View 1 (cartoon, rainbow, N blue to C red):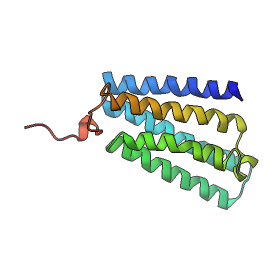
View 2: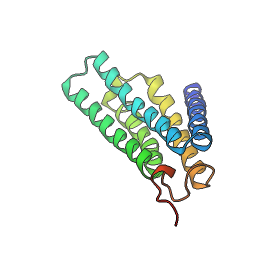
View 3: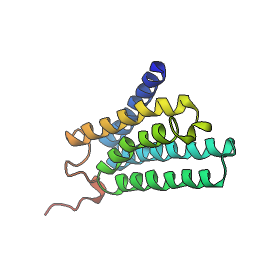
View 4: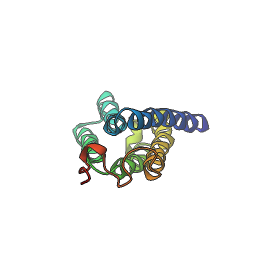
Length: 152
């Protein structure tokens, strides 16, 4: 299990770095779109797992609800405050562990995915919070440069 947690943390750190470098040196919104897209993809994988194991219509509907939930936070994190991205990444371990690792989703979700996602998700949430919270990237008020009104 430690190997999965370390692997997840390394993956999360790598993609956080890529997203935050893009946010700092290309455009803030580019980095946010990458980090939001990965959050949505993390939810989409559960639909794939459920469909692959023929988990049933109710499970597929529940997994689609996860895409709507995390996708909504991702979109808000791109268009508004970076705190939505932090919240989405910080809450995703609940989906991973409570529902899919110790809960009934364990029947179809690979343990390697759920365990590595725990550390991945928390590392990404922390990286976004620290980078934006300290002003290293983005606008200190928590909005993208593209949506912040010009001064004057």
